[in-house]
Length: 204
Image (cartoon, rainbow, N blue to C red; front, side):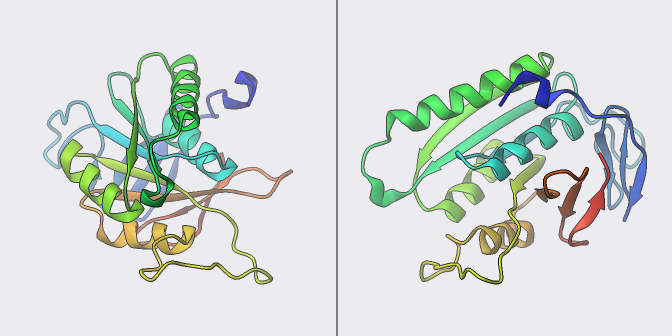
């Protein structure tokens, strides 16, 4: 991915179920939760944003969306890459991937503290435990367009399927969780899904 492709998005101001996008695309409010302060207007301080990343384009789109729309100067961005438990020792390619993505984020937004984690284990359980352990404020997950021609072969719990995994996280994670899907090539914007709204179109 070229640096030119990750330039900060245009300023927007969209109200969505109390979710306000404005000022370099930062997320300010969701369901009465102020990202820059509490309900009384006090300072919330830094927030920790976590993105589950892998080598797919939809996870990279989610990462850049989180960086440009959710994080602000002084915030922390954790890139979590999960290695399936059956794959044996952590491959060097996983470390290379998260380091590369971390460098990309730092180049785009130097004011954000970027941390890269590679953890081996069950995907859903690992995300849930890290959200709690790191006290994550916002979890961002990449989504891909579902195909009616292809079926998703899941494990017994169904959490290995991308859409089922995202759905489980949105409903069960102990933080604000956002599913992000970039629109088709040649069109602008993203589809945003949360616990309160599915496939909301954000033009940015």
